Amino acid sequence: MKISILIPVNNYDIIALVHSMKEGMENVGEFCEIIIGDDGSSEEFRKKYQSLAGEKVKVISSEKNIGRAAIRNRMIDEAKGDYLLFIDADVMIRGTAENYLGKWLENIHLGKVIFGGILYNDNPPGDPDKLLRWKYGRMKEQQKAQERTRHPYSSFSTFNVLIERSVFSKIRFYEELKQYGHEDTLFSYQLKKAGINVQHIDNGLIHEGLETNKEYLIKVKHSIENLSRLYDNVTDKKTFSETVGLLRSFMWIRRFRLRGLLAGIFIKYRDKMELRLDSSKISLFLFWFYKISMFCTFREIHRRRKFLPIFRIPPEII
Image (cartoon, rainbow, N blue to C red):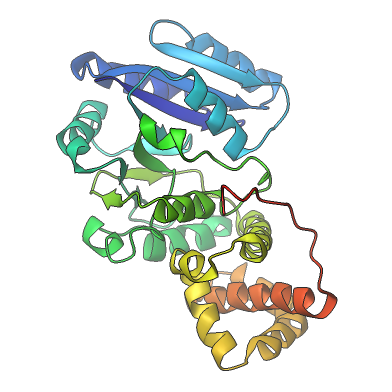
């Protein structure tokens, strides 16, 4: 049995991470290689990644940014492993790489897809402009395996996940999703439709690459827009909604016919909400309301105009 480590990256320093993983691999022989997927990084970073290439480290470079889904698919095609361990570039290992990799081996029997979890530093970032991303991650994304198992598909992420190669003969990452947001959601939906279980263990990595509040709000807008587009295209909206916490809330809002009201509130108070979310007094309830009301706004646009600039998802995916 061989396991490949796949690290997609764009303009982020991963030298320490790769060296740490290589050291861990020396004592956990089943891990056979590290593949770095450079998704259109600058020349400065591209040289750094190429300097890592050598024994057990391969670099795949794209001249332009092709998107998170496309670079992952390229790495899958190049990997030799029977299992593929996807980890994001902006992570830090808690403890040693040897223990981290060893724990995957201990649990590899659990299933074809195993998510290890996301961790955040205990203390808030020194830069207050990054407080929103840290607070949301710490309170909502950082969960024990027991908690994640309650909603195994909505807790799925490619941040830190081990996937058996055979899964990719049925499912691929959808490359038409080029802007940030919910490519993992679509993949999770496909897993559920294919009857492939998502297992959860406590083998988390620390998410260190926190965006500023303003940068994160831009990403949130892109992700909500993607989610609305996906919602338009999927054929099984009930199953899709079960994989996304925000959509479970939307089902209740739609039942009580509150969609138009929330869309109106968003349009009127968006600037004020964003000012509050870019401050030291961050409310996660306000953040949830900001996202759900934004989603309702996209839904109202679609209902009234019968049009959104959507991509077409092939029938075999939906």
